[in-house]
Length: 188
Ligand code: IMP
Ligand code: MG
Image (cartoon, rainbow, N blue to C red; front, side, top):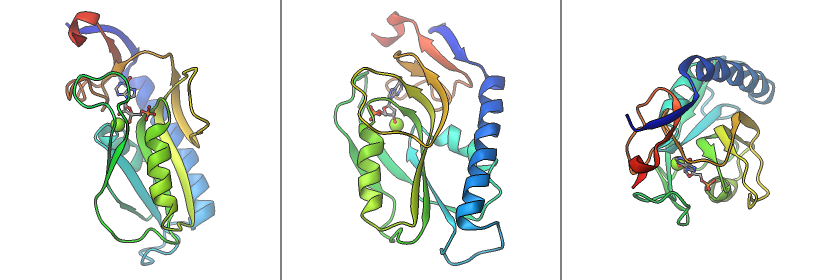
C-alpha cells in the first residue's frame, strides 16, 4: 500500500462539502436570486472548476447547490508529471464566451502558493463578471503564501503533499476516496 496516512476520510469530507454547499447556496441566493428557471445568464451562477484536480470535489459540491448554474471548464496546470513543486501556471479556457455580468465561482482542489488561483482570477476579471468567489477543498499554510484568500475553504492542512479525492501524484491516485499522504517510496 502506497498510503502513509489518511488525513481526511470520506465521511469527514462529505460532511464538510455539505456545509460548504449550504453556505455558498445562501450567499449566491442573496447575490444572484433564487432558482427561478433560466435567465439567459443574468444573475446566474457560473461554476468554473479547474481541471483536473477539482473534478471529484466539484461533482459533490454542485449537487449541494440548488441554484441555476452553468459550468465552464478551465484547465490550470502547474505540477507537470512528478513535480511536487509548482513549475509556473498555464491556463486553457474551454470556450471564448464572455463571463461579463455573471456571478462566477472558481472551484479548485487545493490552494498552495496561490499562483493558480491568481492567474485564473486575472483571466476571469478581464471579462467584467458581476462577482468572483473562490472555493477550495484544501488550503495549505505555507510561509511563502501569496496574498490570496479563498472565500470558501474546506480544510486547512499542513504543508505536505497529499493525493486522493481528485488530487494526483504524476496523474495517479485521484480516485482514492480519502485525502492521504503517500509513503516516500511511492513518490520516487
Ligand atoms: P498553487 O498554484 O501553488 O496554489 O497550487 C495549486 C495547484 O497545485 C492545485 O490546483 C493542485 O493541482 C496542485 N497541488 C498543490 N499542492 C498539491 C498537493 O499536495 N497534491 C497534489 N496537487 C497539489
Ligand atoms: Mg490543480
